[in-house]
Length: 523
Image (tube, rainbow, N blue to C red; front, top):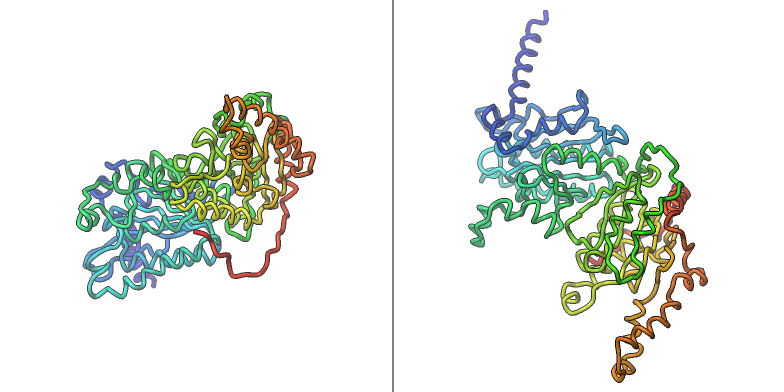
């Protein structure tokens, strides 16, 4: 009794050990020589020991006479400690040591299964991408497998429908071309490992054949291309280990799904305590002087820490996550040290996307406004500044999470609206002393209103300065506050107290909108 079962169990154990060797010793060594971890090593770093449940471990390439371990992708779910809570997450890790991590028939069946599991059980979905894209020939796209190509569109459709329901993360830890490029394209967070990864709709060989460009992976779609130029990447990191840590840190600000609220981190100390006098030295005396908004953010957030998203792209606006008294907040802040903090096409896109992301997952928004308005001029108009600016305005208006607005120095023109001015229902609208809310700065108004006088003046610059000085008291925050158009003018040292109190007060905020399918987004 039981001899047959013992024999079968022995065979199963042997098979599993073979699968865990992935592409074999030589292939694993090549991966390590490139300073890359294997798919299973990455999962070991991401998931708590002993909690990973692998799905489809015994999957292998259809029609192959040899074992193709896990058919080039490791899928499953387990518990991840993000530093705030231990949560369940679903994972698909493409294994470059097996068929270059390419997308085959069986591997995509497995990934479809884990996507379905993630959505059904409402847990974050994490892709660890290290893939050459679609597999050609047997086991992938071939003449007899054309129907499989037609079916792979479910990947894109399902990921689009998962958006805003569960957090979606695509870590670029190697190449991700063709089909695997749209995984990050449809995800919420895309960290990229420097000099190890690349993504694009076509790889170097295809690009050279189609349009004659002869490029390396890094030149075509490396981390610098997408984190500094295209905006498709969210964060550059130095190693696989740093990438896994970034995923954990990012998800620590998020709930499991759209039906929950993010967890409050443990916090010691008094979140209402005054900030030290150093904050008073951060803000320049005049609205035209440059300063780096990061230096102010440091005083406001817990431990001075901002988890910044897209820090090297559209640097005139800062977006990211932080905590105030342990509570997560999404930050949107103008940065005067780049283009004066003006909102151009890329900045509007960057801010709008972040607002939509935070609103989808119940993360309150903190707007830190020091904005001269939207970019003007023929170049801006040709780039579609109206359409892109409207995207940001649309996002702010649509957001139903708590919205807190701090006017640091100035909030001019439509930039005031886009940075959640009074008409956009901020739950708190406060300003620092000396701030201004106006259609534009005093000098700009004078140049328009007194244009004819300036044309005949002996010293136009002196006249602008004099008239602007006369006008400035009428747009000062004191005048605005006297009219009841801001909730308060606060001492900068009280910032944490004011924001923490507002954050606590708005925990149970509910907004009811008109019934509709969805808005028509100006994209």
